[in-house]
Length: 156
Length: 170
Image 1 (cartoon, rainbow over the protein chains, first blue to last red):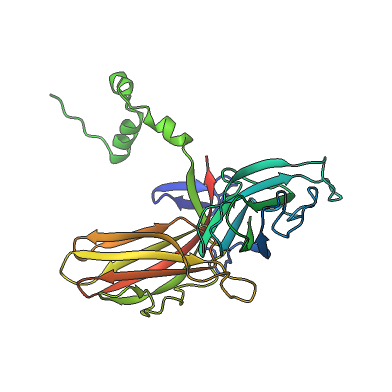
Image 2: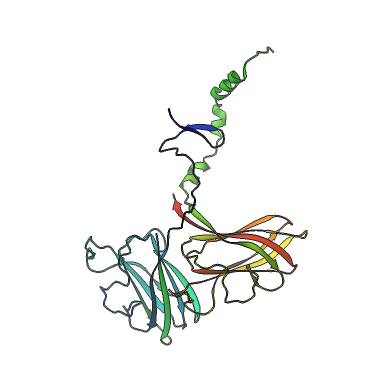
């Protein structure tokens, strides 16, 4: 005998995959957003230098990020020098090796904000990520070296 | 004009199978089809992050009542895509409350990455007396938020801050 319940206040419906019983979830917890990296970077004029101050173009700033729909980059910049950032991404095979050399460039722009200001950048800006590796490069194009404190959070 | 006595059940059946006029159909708007293609946000988890009352006055005051700019209203808000602040202001005068929202990120020890806050936004809530209001804070995943209120006319605001996680659906 099918189990029936009152749906939408007036409709009697059989319980099925398409019309499951309404339930109130108790003790549910939010899906965590993971802090993936907290780094302090001295922003210089050197191009191709990532948040870890690494200049090897093939080294990712973040690895094993395939589970994240989006990364959110929070930062606090101590200086006002005009700064260019570049966000690169790529996929890896089951061994963690990149499918090929090089990167797909997701973004390149001027880092928003002035001295002693906060910023927030979503990676990617639109749509979903799910890339395995990311490389985030910053360099200034004028002014003086300054400190950039970053936090990257992975959102599922 | 002739009358017919029918049962309630029979009347319902006739109503259900009654034909819809073609003339009506041709004038139906087609906006619904486009609406289905618009992306919309569907929350799958919500949590109450803070609930209480705030005595608003001429000072920029945290929802928790303090006027110390370094103190957050909520901590541990990282998982949430967006926040909703829903409230109700007591008093017979029209509501005219200024609000502003600040946010910041913290390191693994809970220390802010830098000084001050990021200004997420500010607004003025103006409603007739004894009405509900709701403010959506779409910039999510910050670790800490500070929500400040100010009102030239002192008043009491009951409010609740909710964090939500959701998906964008097509």
